[in-house]
Image (cartoon, rainbow, N blue to C red):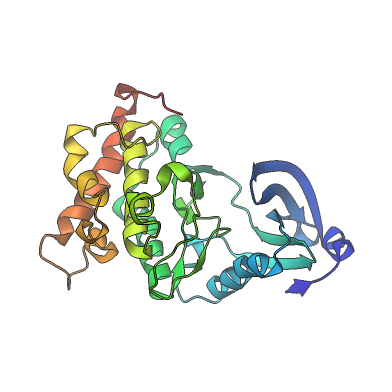
Length: 276
């Protein structure tokens, strides 16, 4: 639902504390007055109205997507206030980012739960959306009575892919693939695989990714493949998921990915928790 005045927003929603802040704006916790539904309000400030509208268009497309709704938070309302865009989204109440969850909660991801981010990335590719900023901070784990729920969040840097080479530098600088530094461009799928490799590195090693660091021995093979310098040498998302119509060795990637995620849960105290 598109609304166009700040007053309309303030009548319908109450904002509480700030959840996060970045170069593109801030995110606040809050609730909808009717029914006290927990929400998050994302405020984006930009003089380029087209860039602001892109995030709303993508979120609206995802809201009507034919995929498990809980794989991504749903857009509830959006408010176009000239040079500010407010996106109101559902807010999982008992959720933490993936790295915090692994460090503090001592939980465990089963295969179905661990595959959500991969499945979401493949789904986005199939509907022509390039997230561009998949990382542990954008992967939320919510604890519910039914079990764990995994969310992929923050589409502030996303765009429509159109199977083209991207030249605009977007995303977390430390997570950018070497493609951009070598050629000043990058493509969606190998970049997404690279970012998933970074997520796996940080989960297994419990430290921030650094291209100069070495890998734990038991994850060297899959990380080496995800973080290959040449993007054509990286596995596809389908290979990571182990779809039956891909190459026979494809299952190895997914099995190793899930094994390493869960092995890190019981052994994280053995890893260096430093990094920056």
